[in-house]
Length: 137
Length: 137
Length: 137
Length: 137
Image 1 (cartoon, rainbow over the protein chains, first blue to last red):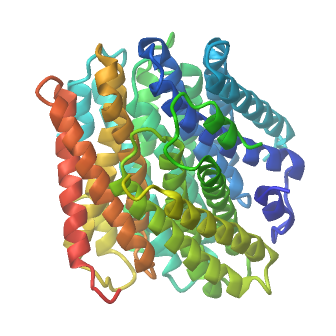
Image 2 (image 1 turned 180 degrees about the horizontal axis):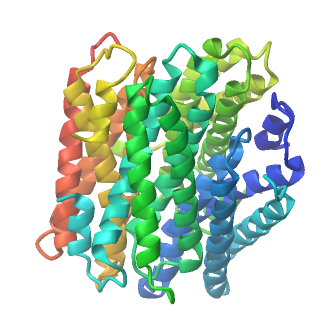
């Protein structure tokens, strides 16, 4: 069991959101942030740098947005829905764009294939958390 | 002139967004992130901690969201509007919430007054940048 | 297998450091950063706030230092040993301090027990990576 | 006056470190983190990408280490010297390496000249803060 799930299970307050959906989004954003940081560096090690620039830029954005989303999701109580919803939407969008670009390079570069998986999983987890959020929150 | 503005003025590409609005948002997000991190610590030094918990939580969220927004705005070319627009909206929302809560404490704590100013300025700068973004971007 | 390990196994360059030690440190820093962010919020939900302030502060520092360490470790090639060694030493130190403080609260709060485990594992992983780094790097 | 300095002047506790040195380091780390993030993107826009790879990697490390240093310095009370000293040393080292590499490109690229200035100023401010820290802290 991930630390994220263990932290949720020992949280002093009653959660107002589904713990499975929340734990999945916390783990996925954290792992996607790391995968994109690593993929930035792997891209920079390839020969055809000019073709990798878009992938590098999207990986940088994806790392930063996933990191912020992870930290905000990790602090549950009294969180601000006005800020959290668009943040999750931004995270879904950047994971979609970054995953699409990584997928273009996946046939050539195994590291882009791994990063595609991390982005797809994170996109899905954030979408499912958005759907699970109580509309009145 | 801030480094942010100097970096924009020496950028190798033609900007597709108003440089004044962009530089203002880059500076405001960076300074708001720092002010909120400092205010978290100042709040933790006060006696009536129970009344400061909401302020602490919002300052933590505001630091993380402003940091991500700053980094994404600092990388201009080929940026992804689908991710950047909701990120800016999230930043506006958290600066509004955090500024409102800090303002409640401003009569008692000078550090919350300073943080209110940083949040209000950042909220305004991000709103103005949203308005300046070409709708087709 | 974690994404971190998969990214290392698909890296375009030959690693100059032991892949097991590196993957362990990358995973441990990422999970410790998240656990500490979650523990900050759990601490803020407890009644005896005044006794939790030191734990909150150390968790905040631990999140920030673990995040930076994770990102730097995730980009392997041409990394700068002069910066990476003291960063790892800083990470070991903050995980030790934060783990010690969390352990004091572990008998009372299960979330501090989970966070202690994350800090201890991260401290150990960063120490082992420091030992594995080629002295000439 | 920067928000960082205003936050220090309104801090509820007595500072145990020189406020001028601390404010200078807080401002310099924050601005250097941003300048390096912007320079990463400017470098990625240049034609001779292969020659810019080292500069890009160092700018990425410098952003992450300066950000962590800034956040830790922004939270003053009860901070852990065992973690803060090596973190400052890491920040000095990465600013030195990144400034040296940017300086190599400064004759050709004005954005690297601006980034050199931000790195040099940050290196100096962190060194001066290290010297100002009470040895017993």
